[in-house]
Image (cartoon, rainbow, N blue to C red; front, top):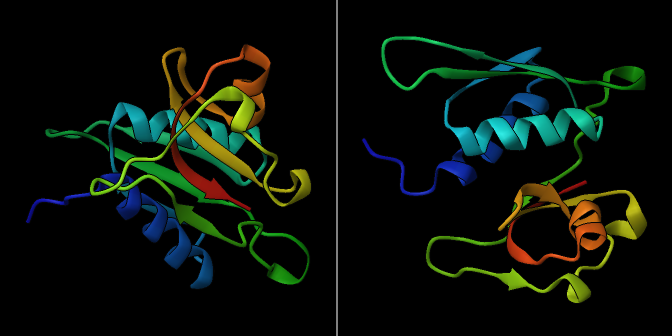
Length: 132
């Protein structure tokens, strides 16, 4: 079965694995998903990620991070731009998410980056998701 929205599938897999207290989650790989996992690691939402090659498209393994009392670090993941409705923002319209406690991941002309980096680079783009 073909997945119509692979980014939403990735976010749902991470959300479900965090609620089930799994150490890691496997996701079908792509370059966009690897870039998103890289941002999640840089921002401290996941411990690590690894791309495993197989005979097909590869598997992205994301190692989840937990805080005190085994509570997940990821509280919420929300897909903003969908295949049916794309959401684009200019750099001046990008606002901090939850007073800076969350991030928005954008696909810009200079690559995939957080809202903070997009404001610094003065570029806008498609808002892929919000994470807090």
